[in-house]
Length: 436
Image (cartoon, rainbow, N blue to C red; front, top):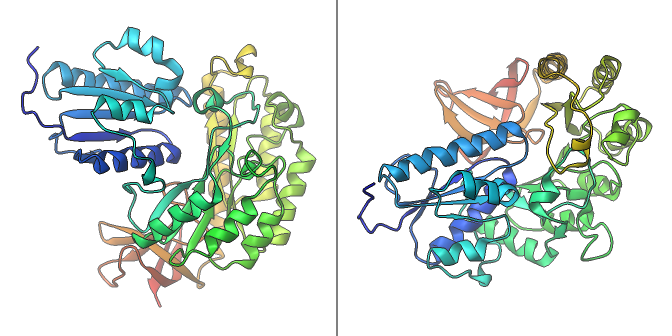
């Protein structure tokens, strides 16, 4: 099949999956730019001759999306629309032999730790001096901020250690340097991410140092919001809450994935936690940081989950009233501990349980939002969409949480800036307001 002969070496990076993947793509793009290789992110111009797909391999839906994307660009290569197709990331790390066998029109497959090798295939050198420097693909006023890689937790359902390896914390000095670099480029909000952020420091400092890291990052001039994601509940370092309460630029927000509340299932999931300890932790978080927004995630349809245990989860959510909540259907992942169990909850029942959880959370969110009418919040504006400027309070992370909408036909705010907004109207997951 005839291919392009443009000699164009422009790269288009396509990112799938989570915020950790976004950071990896941004680092890759920063390296390409430093090697004078033109690079874009998810460009619709179709003017790149090289496509790099950064895949996700987390659960079934994400894996299918990655495979579909690879097949789409493999066909584009066959048709001569692109010259080179490279696949990297979690799916490639986990299933490289199978992918090489099944999709042969890909030039190279790389895993999650193969950046120097990937660059070499493009005639580029890995530049160690670029630590912390990357091309931000999010709006420039916020950035995902990866503090560690990999995970040492033994959770039965999770394939992340298979794809990302053991937990490796990034040195504090390196992270502070990166925060300063991002602030110099206009970043105002850092969203701390990791596979397990509460484990930070155990490997290199021999103790949990998340609180110290937060303090150091809070000192960086220009950073107005710091947001904590993926805080594993077991072994949670309570001093983090004191820092959060004391430092103005650390958001009163925490993302703490609980997955379930049934003691039976928590034990099978190998979470190292119990219902009683979970409730105690949630109460302590709220006692130490009054007004904090707590986000969690749950799994519906884990092997052996009975209707009684599902109802137990619903009751827990009703009583706890999380500010934010997401829920996934259980995905039976090979080579995980739970794969030895029988995936015995039918897919339609899993989905029914997900729907029940989200319906309950919708009502909880609406009641919480109604209490905000008439109150004034500091809001960071991310974008303009249609007739609305859209932003977030300190209690909301991009894409997954509530948004604040201001009528652009009546008032003006600058994207990337903060404004004080009085809430005038609410629905389940959106707040409407006006500039004061």
